[in-house]
Image 1 (cartoon, rainbow, N blue to C red):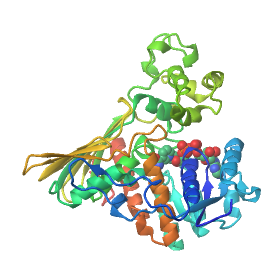
Image 2: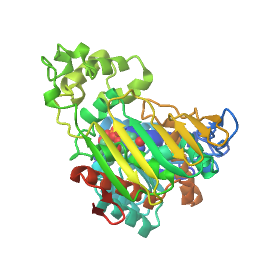
Image 3: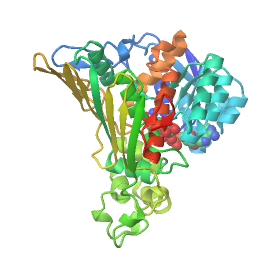
Length: 460
Ligand SMILES: NC(=O)c1ccc[n+]([C@@H]2O[C@H](COP(=O)([O-])OP(=O)(O)OC[C@H]3O[C@@H](n4cnc5c(N)ncnc54)[C@H](O)[C@@H]3O)[C@@H](O)[C@H]2O)c1
């Protein structure tokens, strides 16, 4: 395809890389004339009773009018690589099997989307920054603090825009909450309570059987899943916590909880019908639903027939008993936070919930906000009245629960490159690094059983 507008390269054409790239393809097809907003959808939250309708994510102008083309890809999996190259009509000389080969070709595009797995973010991010690329980097930025800081330093010395994929910042829901707080509708926020209900089958899929099940291969659960939540709490409260404590462990998905008679694989298991975590039930039921075939089934197998799924469950990691795996990440964790202002935050992540959106309560001196990820209820302490804000275009989607936000993020990155204005992105590299540092501090607190003072870098 002939390049127009912003040009992009993709390192890692997996689930995430393909998602952002598809958005770029949509912008190219839409051309310059389309009105802004995420895919023609209004990014505004509608309100049932007036109030603070969002005028674009973070109140910023719509970014969707800029177009982009994916002109190069690096992906080792041949089937994914070929499919991606065909979808984006990338000529063979710009199709690579490794991000290192893409980098060795010099700068082929304005920006690069780095969507390799967690342990392979830092090296490509620094290399591509040194080549002068602007960078859209999947979270977590890196698997340790020094590497994350080195990425930010590389972006800064090269003048690269660096956007970390904290997609929750890009939802209309988030924009409305921030606008309500900024407008003083709840007075001064004094505390926040935030829940990430990961969902029982989602947890089993990604954090017991899947890519993020082991700390040594990716990172702790608080980083691989909930760096989003910590970043979001910071974004909403408007300050970075000064002190943190944390508790959490792997309580359930352990060999000692294996039911009597359970087999190593669900296909062979006599007690499978009564098990909430049956891989057979989960993945065979995905066959009937196009959304569930896209995710989680496509992670398990590309053969979407019953025989194909059964083969994957017999041979691959996703058919294993959840009590007989090599997983070690926590299945529940809490983090308590104290902000410099004295405000407090309490965060809970748990596997043992329905698969629903994050839920939040924000307690202010003059009002209270309660949200379920789509609907916000504001209670005014002066009038006693309740106001409802529907931000319904943000729904829990099966491919990661944030498809509108993924589009808005890709649009913002493209717009930041097209205009040369990084402020179109709602977080800069330093803010993302600060959020990651809170996660690492919370993990130190959990392991040491102490309160960690983030500013001083010490335990108390
Ligand atoms: N922002 C979010 O909400 C969100 C959601 C899910 C995952 N993620 C993160 O996105 C990243 C990718 O996750 P995913 O689910 O797309 O995983 P994935 O495994 O589907 O994709 C990663 C791709 O990188 C490719 N790859 C491996 N080595 C490579 C190399 N040397 N050069 C180029 N490509 C290489 C793999 O073959 C694979 O296709 C992870 O870091 C993950 O934590 C973010």
